[in-house]
Image (cartoon, rainbow, N blue to C red; front, side, top):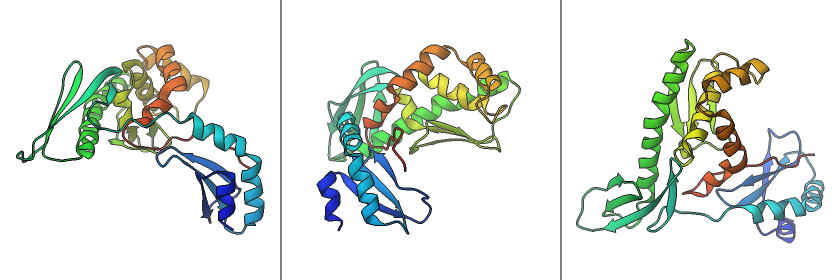
Length: 241
């Protein structure tokens, strides 16, 4: 019966979930597939009918995915919004991989045939260097202290704030323009005071931003582009029943 999925789309995958309460479609841009999430007691025939009725949505979302930009020689990545060309110098005689960021390039000297994981690790470290002091500074402006700051490859959020005051950010923010990164940090720091999206929260968020309008607008319109670099998921609003 699973063959029916391929009739709807060759990029459709079935996921039976004990936690799901309703059938839903979830776009996974990391794998470039759409997952059909089905409650474990639901009829598969009903689930397939749901997916078939949303075939246009599936095709549209898959077709709109930006082309992947893997971390290989010649790929241009927008580090802090500035285009930088990855230049890989392979030397099997080397014992370590060294990475240097210049005005126009990300220079990688390595003994590895595929140094993409090292490049991602470097960018994560760079993101931490930029995000941590920025968040700490904004928190100090409003008399707040941050618990821990973590930088991860998050699945669906660019940032988050826990009830304990811990902040988490996507390392991919290092690929966004400074105003966009600043906005995301301001957004999460504002949650240290308001754990909601009330008018008071948005007023504080604007107050903490260097350029709220530019940052908010860029994230709303272009943030999904960040997911094409290296690897990672991004999920726009999906249909549910």
